[in-house]
Image (tube, protein in one colour):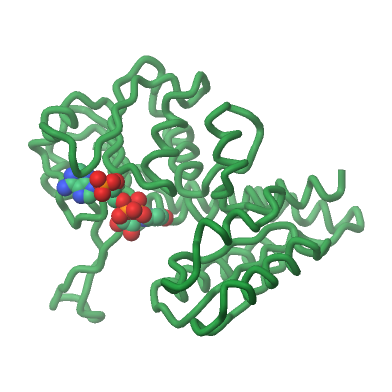
Length: 292
Ligand code: NDP
């Protein structure tokens, strides 16, 4: 069984991005600049933003974080986005989700200038993705595609089953896997909580992509022999043998799946680091557009 090492792939891509930044600086341009808006004190969101900041530093990007209280009004937040949209020294903007309940995520995402929407969540960018036009692909699906490409997993004509239809992971991934593109050209089935016979459908998959949010739900009984599995889920489960008191697991029961699968992207060290690298790639692309 092959382990698809997202950490190694992402480190190689980061090294290439860092080289490109050096070249930009040598030519007298400024480094790419990624801004993040973080509202409130949610622990997971703070961790995600911190790791994005760290990755920006590693490749030589400028990063800035707008930390705002969860008492902020929708209008104040819209004004912050407007300010960043107009700042020519900022190439990309990410709005860390989830937002407090009194703020409409859709309204705010739509306020981000599509040219700076390096998360690829704006309806204009989603539309372009569906049409196969040049755009910023959403980071997690883009990271998955990049990982499949680097791991040299054959996709053309294969059966791909995606479990989970969220707007940020499952649905866009299903679109990308069905594109007339390499990797792509799969026959795709998109499953969700109302799907009947999930086990039988998953068992058809040559490539099984899990974005369910249910710790270790999928075991060997869902998997065709030799299938490639991309596990997007990430969960903390209690583990008294660990110093921290927990360990990270995915939507896949790894030990069980490893008996039959041909390849697995592990958790941690699979899709997570690829997501961040895709965000960096989008930001680099945005910065290059500014100097064209
Ligand atoms: P959501 O909760 O938004 O979506 C989950 C999807 O899974 C829904 O479409 C839901 O169906 C479906 N689902 C839930 N239960 C079942 C079930 N029993 N059988 C079949 N389908 C089911 O999650 P996200 O897409 O945001 O995230 C999924 C996982 O990926 C999470 O663990 C998250 O932490 C992780 N993640 C990891 C990232 C990374 O970089 N590594 C990035 C983003 C997410 P329905 O639509 O019917 O409700």
